[in-house]
Length: 125
Image (cartoon, rainbow, N blue to C red; front, top):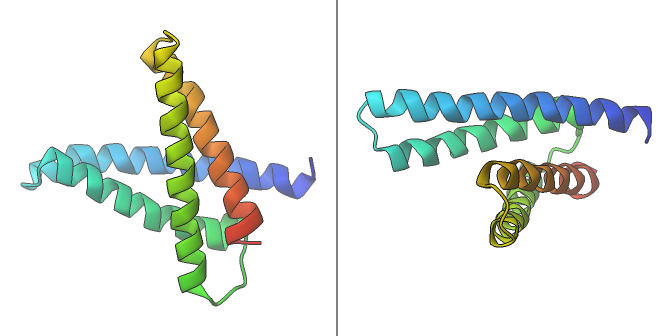
């Protein structure tokens, strides 16, 4: 693995950790402001997508492209693809009898790897 890819993976993990924190904060804070749990969850994901896109473009992959529409569309496509694979993996592991927490952990690895590779090779190439 190239040194630059290793740095990108580390930065990707840092942003992913921040994303998890933001999601949990939104899920805790927004209901106190009158939002439903479902709306809070959706809002958390929207905030995280924007947060993640900005850090991915500017810090992780250092994209110089000025075509925000193309990059944002590809970013959302990468997210949806990674989520679909994560969801399929999670359910397959549950069907195989795996504990839901371990299944979630393993399927999140699938999500992260897919999302990282799609963004590195397609969105921000």
